Amino acid sequence: MTMTAPADRRARLRSAARDPESWEAVVTVLGPLQIEVGGVSIVPPAMKAKQLLALLLLNQGRIVQSRTIERELWEEPPRNSANAIQNCVMQIRKKLAVALGEPGGGQTAKRLLSTESLGYKLNLVTGRSDLRTHRQLVAEASAAEATGDLEQASALLREALELWRGAPLADVFPGPVLYGEITRLNEENKSVLMRRVVLELRLRRYAGLIGDLRALIPMDEYDESLHACLMLALHMTGRRNAALAVYRNLRQGLSENLGLEPSRTLQNLHRKIMIDSPTDPVRLADIPWLTGAGVDVA
Image (cartoon, rainbow, N blue to C red; front, side, top):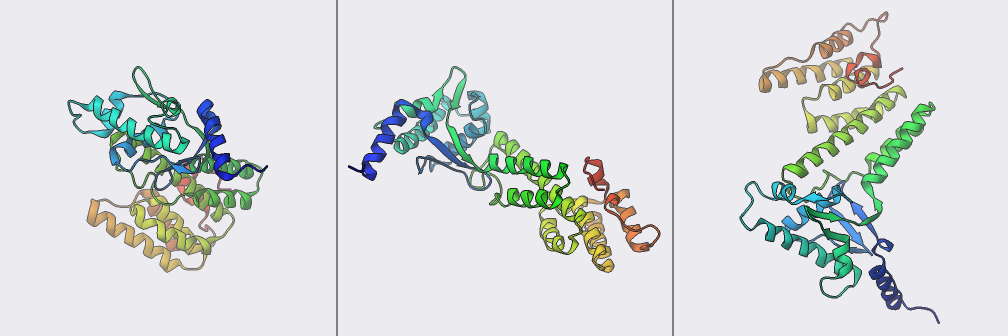
């Protein structure tokens, strides 16, 4: 007799109760926070509890000390902070218990989110993770680039970048600890983005990059490396005046808003584009942020 779907689910729930590692979480952090166990979300609706879950998730398998949790959740921890943290933990465990089909608080839920002497630890086994997939694709791109397959490397980086659905943990209001983690993830994303830009430039796909770079610059309006790449792409497609306009706009913004001038290196790139000498043509190596970061621009 074929096992029905409800019976199959009950069997899996009994298995999970015996061995929580038989249930793997599906995790998304490159955008709104999503964590599912057995196809059921375990993200609590209350913001403090969601904030705690995000912190535990980014420290998966490691103890997060109570004082770190206090610093994340409150500027000035309340007198009853230990009870407030425990309440957040109970909300997460309740969601876990529902996902596992356990009655009450659920012993498996307590094992998956364990109380330790100094704090708490999340012991979920992650089956799929957008961040882990992102990093795997970046590693594969590095291997492809090392063999000279620039097209494959660029395609893999594009696939990695497409996993981002907005800011990391976009629906979580971060405290200082999570803010540091989010900043680190954003810097990681920017590094991957610049690697792909360099690959596209090396492949001489200048025209295809112009729109992407114009869309990126408003997100970091004083980033000279982005402006330099856009200037190069425009110049290489015969749009020297547009390339020079990019420099003028940046210089105006720096002067009016920060009281600064573009760096000497960007000034040199501007001068080289302006002269446009056939004996000393503009090259990718003229963008020093890329060569200085150890990027092969040959």
